[in-house]
Length: 300
Image 1 (cartoon, rainbow, N blue to C red):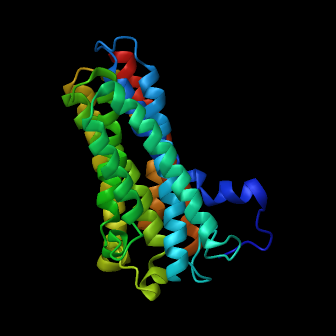
Image 2: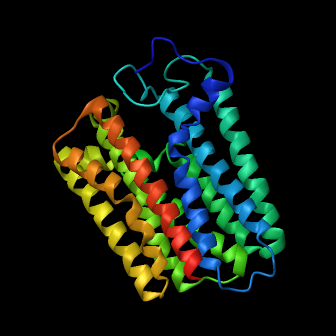
């Protein structure tokens, strides 16, 4: 659904990058860096900054690639609500959006290559997997986002890989703390996609985009959304206690946003009204995630 007065120029491209999704890139790096506190890093904290560049560029690249692929397939049309679609709205030529996605992926690949040269060649394989998964989410002949597997991608790459990977580039080992902490991070990111797909369930069904929400239906999707939040919170609390980083219990700072989002979803909120819930879900991820990261770091 396009605004009557859509932005132009740089604001248009910023809107197309979907800035509300960027906490999904920031939080895993913050938590991964926090999990490295207390380990010998050799003073190489600049690696964390490069990891953040990789994560942000990958998220933006996925957003542009998704916009391009959905747009040329005709998935993004007037039936859809939510963030502005560059191609679907007809405001930007598909080739330009595809080029923007390529540039973003190039930035992610370049920063990742820099880390690989310092840390180890295994990161080249991880980076290649991230880029491939980012493009084929909605691109290519058989996009897995159209098969109901988008949540798997988000959980794995913006949870496990991004969080554990950040810790790994800092301390050059996979730690139990980073793995356990990454589960909550992945679930918070997945919740964003679940609520996004719940909002778009009608349009996606008509367009033949068989997301998880389309496959299991709205009532079950609402249950999944609530369970994701409950499990994410429980895992974060467990991580803080098991690893004796009790300041990690600061994760409860995002509890009010979580409760409101879950109540709204349980009440049966639909369509454009779910945009508010999407915002609340982003606040859960940002506030809970950063509070969790700060707590883990302070206890390290």
